[in-house]
Length: 462
Image 1 (cartoon, rainbow, N blue to C red):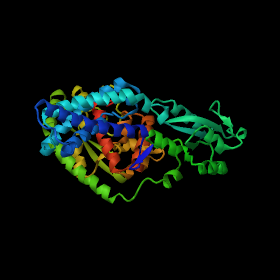
Image 2 (spheres, one colour; image 1 turned 45 degrees about the horizontal axis):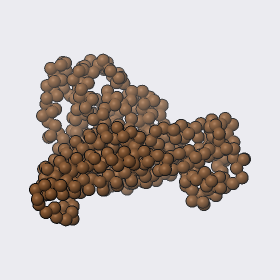
Image 3 (cartoon, helix red, strand yellow; image 1 turned 90 degrees about the vertical axis):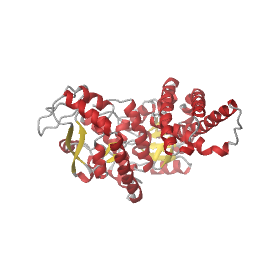
Image 4 (cartoon, one colour; image 1 turned 180 degrees about the vertical axis):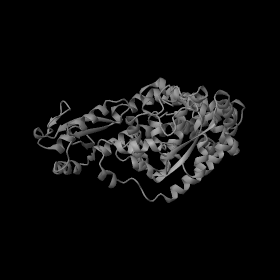
């Protein structure tokens, strides 16, 4: 994997993204040349129109990212990839229309744009048909040797079998566990030279997955392996990279304390984030005002009660604030003072409420909370005080998610469906901790783009 701005990107995704960019530039040029040939005009040099070509390519590539066009499923299923490409092309037209409206010199003629879209569709589908399986195959996956054969090693073995994962478990070495759970693991005593064994398996990484590390670290083995050029990872760092979340079962306080995350030097990026929050919230409030008014009328017509719903939430540094949403439940949905998890097909949700929850319209008033500075567009979702007290009791490191400003959308929201239990909260906390640890403007941009995927294909919205 390649680490970009503290976020891990698989080699296959990076390579496909670079190929796509070249193909999109080529498609834009094809559209221009074809139209020029039709009207008998001189096409000129491509260097003369590189801003138009680049705007076309970047807009469509952002649309591909937004709809999940670089997810694992795109490498495994051509049908899935083609469907996402079709949606991305449609979104690309919308993006380009906005760009052309704001910056007219970047505009292509409509006929150029039509031919470019057709060429882009053909080229992108073709490259996925030709390279999709190859890029998603073992050739682009790292070979890993796991030191350990207990429960932690078994988790890596199971993870390696999941579709779209970016590594292959080349071998397991039993380190004398009392209860080994990985069948076929080679006993350490049967391996004369561990470094040579790792190289013989053509592995590029070794993962330390011991059940008990105190006074049990095979330091001599690890040193010899490392000096051969093979990288060595502890299991928590490895799982963080492969899954995009902090694994609560394996991470330790010292691993978080001495990690390279949680950077304090965020003054410039925090100022930029606040400037974006102010500009974007103002723009969205103005643009969506007609939609908010129509939704408000629909809510009032269907059920009695106020249009807006205020709810106490816990924010930055455990400070409480009121979140503002469009009401999607009956007015008597909760007994005063008693918080209740939302459930699937919750009978308390109104018909209008079910629709606005599906397409996230009920979240729009939170732009006002963002404008006031109590929330950001991106961050961990703020939780209710009653739930926070319970979750902090059951889940380690839960309080650490309150060290950043809460958000309307977040890393957990685009990677995990709505949760309504302690177990769901645990999974979402793992994603939230990853965001807190690895925050960067690049990760914020990725989350904002892929929030569109959640809106288009809602999963578990309640």
